[in-house]
Amino acid sequence: MALLGSPKNLTARLKVPQSVIAKVAIGQRCEVRIREHSVAGVVQRISSQVENNSVEVEVSLQGELPLSARPLLNIDAEIIVAHLHDALYMLRPAHYSAFKPVVLYKILAGGQTKATRVSFDTSSGKLAVIADGASAGEQFIISDLTTLAQQGAQVELY
Image 1 (tube, rainbow, N blue to C red):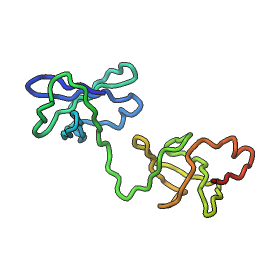
Image 2 (cartoon, one colour):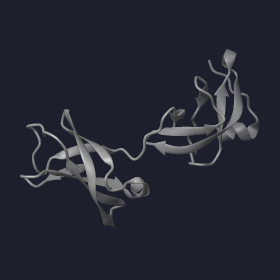
Image 3 (cartoon, rainbow, N blue to C red):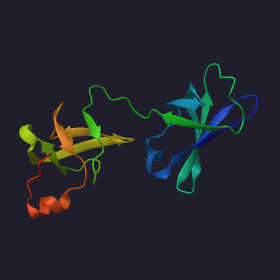
Image 4 (tube, one colour):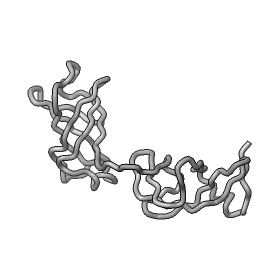
């Protein structure tokens, strides 16, 4: 959640979770959604205080603002912290941990599965970037199946 301030020079104030604030830096680009419109922005200030597990980030809005933009309006925003080219990714699995391998079940032909160790680099929202253990087009079960793995069960799809 975020708020717009100042009636003359609108600035977006974003509440960024403390767990990801280390990825945010001054000068990073943003996309701010004001109702059905998108506006470009740039991170101008990052607060040093943490309140309710979030940090306030001020974003200057670039270009022409939509008519619906006004002070104290609730908005949504995304801060672009990195660009990855040719990245292989999947939905973030249960027990995901960046930079640590996880055992996932790869779905094979005929509905059979095979336990496969997959390593990840980083994540963005619901997606995790794959470092090793998976190739493009492969399918995996990302739900928590640790009890089945401990019992040595063979998983089949129906």
